[in-house]
Image 1 (cartoon, helix red, strand yellow):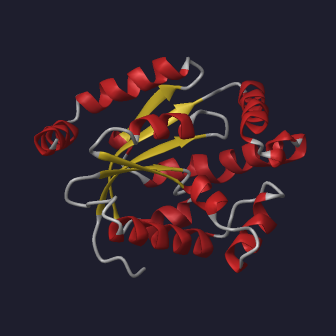
Image 2 (cartoon, rainbow, N blue to C red):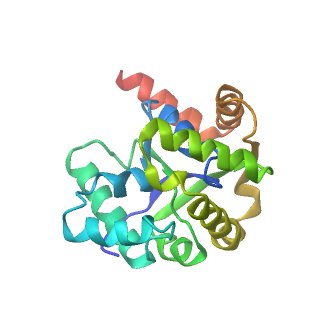
Amino acid sequence: MSIARKYRTMLLFGMPGSGKGTQGLVLGQLPFLVHISCGDVFRKIPKYGELGREIVQYTSQGLLVPDDLTVRIWERHIQILEMQELLLPDQHTLVLDGLPRNHAQAVRLDEVLDVVQVFHLKITDNDQAADRLRARALRENRLDDMNDEVILRRLKNYYEETYETLRFYDQSLIYDVDASQSPLEVLRTIINRMSDLRHFEEDRAKANAIV
């Protein structure tokens, strides 16, 4: 990878429909956090371009985008944010949603991510997760999420690849959150945990000083 520094990072893990994107969007409003949704980055790439056509080839079937392409796109996005001064590594903590998705990505990104916390948003009821995906599909016009076969494949990928990725990280960094709660209760749990971590308190103090 061409990025030479390490970024302080908080990871949001969870099966599709667990609310990672919802929580990431809210957390990204805090002045010391920068939320990056890998899925949103992919969706903003023009579908008629070379990268866009390659991405749709996989996502339309409920398949994960290959690791090399995923990391290259993420790396480019990070560099753009820095050039726009929307990401200041000395002041911000990244909130990554949807990355890394598997062990290979975790290994590749380990050289550039200083992971300080992993929030694991857990849903034990697959039917509930599937219902959430269908509701989101209607709300956000994600037609692929309406397909039962695609939904089942995504849940299968989660258990076989993403869930196993948690083992790559120091278990003391992983904090389980009951994602079957309301979004507000999930957010409360995450914020309470962050308040217990010293470096987040220091970041908040710096942000308040700037404002």
